[in-house]
Length: 215
Image (tube, one colour):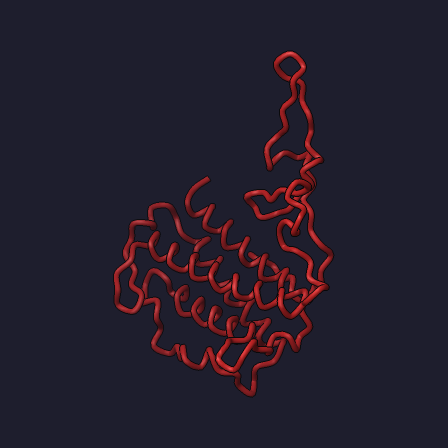
């Protein structure tokens, strides 16, 4: 697996975390704030998608901070902000990001691009954005967990269930007791790793309104 393959895998994993969190809150939960100075999930999505559009449009040829981006407006609730428009921003930003990175070749990683006039290698630019998106997806998950309350379904290993579940490098949860035991060394057994076909990935049944394609 190449660096680009793994970067795409990590990005898809973060999008899926966001999708699964968003599926657990009512539409009005998108616009709730913890306090007047906090950002709602909708504003976080506006910011993330605005960043994605700016960074990944003509990625190799133009500065990552586009002149038509109005970053401050990303943190303001506007009349045209609806659950549908927020959902379109989320899907569109991720689609643009994944397509731009998916079009790169390994030899592109040492090329130079700029973000706000500061030079980055392509590899540095990808790492910068990957960590930035992980930070904001974490915020979305935190807020969704708060607003969902007792109905929340864990996105990884539920509290008190560490001995019952594991999480693969793909981010999928699987039952730890569903391991295939294979005889080895005079009758002793060993279990297969997280990628073994005998482990069944767990995925909750969620509202499909927020389950879009991550590609």
